[in-house]
Length: 467
Ligand SMILES: [Zn+2]
Image (spheres, rainbow, N blue to C red):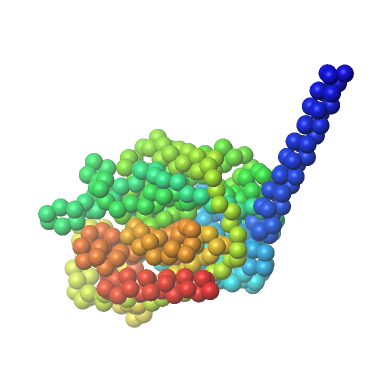
């Protein structure tokens, strides 16, 4: 008798516990999906199928010779409970230009009604991708593997395909955010010395004491059954581990690959941060690129195993092209002299501007520079800066906008020509301070107004989305 009572009590206990568990699980599910958010993701291969000119290093002298792995354009679309949408587009490319981003955005706006301010284009800045920027200072004939116009035209269709696929894929999702740090393989190449800032391109003399942004932001998208569909993550460091002639996403490419292997069926998307002066501490070997990628992927996996905050609230975007001024063009005589320079960059720049002068083509000292802010719920604010911002911008915006739980500051957004220094770095000089502008079709370094235009511009956009 006693035994059967024990069994009865035991069964009753099991039933009650099961009921509690079921109700807790149901409650959890309803809490997760009560946010009413949707997400969609896509990944499209953009590896050229024939040799093309590669981006990243001015001394390249031949086209691509195959690949280490495929490179991709990927899109992650979000929809909040009110039907507001936003799309983040990432790619294993050096960068894309403003007219390219605006053309893709226009096509998407016409097709889906998504406003320009709610679509953001980021590139990883890999130096082992096809050249995707126009205009360049120099022309490479097709027989030498040029094909840049041809590739960029094809690329545009792939971007539209990726964004369309992500929007079509929108379905109920649980969006969560977390961050982790550090992944300390980034170091500064601006080495302070009694003679001023020295620009260092070799690991032996990097400045490990320089400012960095080691925090890895991680945003995950889960489906109704709890499986991870997408992982958006970031880091701030130049993908210049490799300088080879094979297509490769460098460390961000490997990180995405390793994360997708760890979460089968998920798409991993990389967002490059303000990596202006930040470079990997070990370079020029495939193993190093894989090692940095592994370190980053491991950090992301660890972050996903820990506590994450749900993304709730609404989506809002703000976008503006501020005008940034460059120093005026030097005298024609300077360029005529530089035509015979030993420096290939000076020769290319001289030929480019002399041709423009001879043809009476307009030469603009002021250029539109896109700034963008995407609010993802009440938790995450993504600030997208153009060009190659130095890390000081990330540190500054992160410390300024304390209403949000996380400020994610990305560089290489919407437009990719040129470094974006602070006024302090401009005064210090060096590569990011102005010297690198000689690689670009600009009249000269920025004038001293650029930092203020960027900071004021971002502040205004943050106000717009925070109402
Ligand atoms: Zn760069």
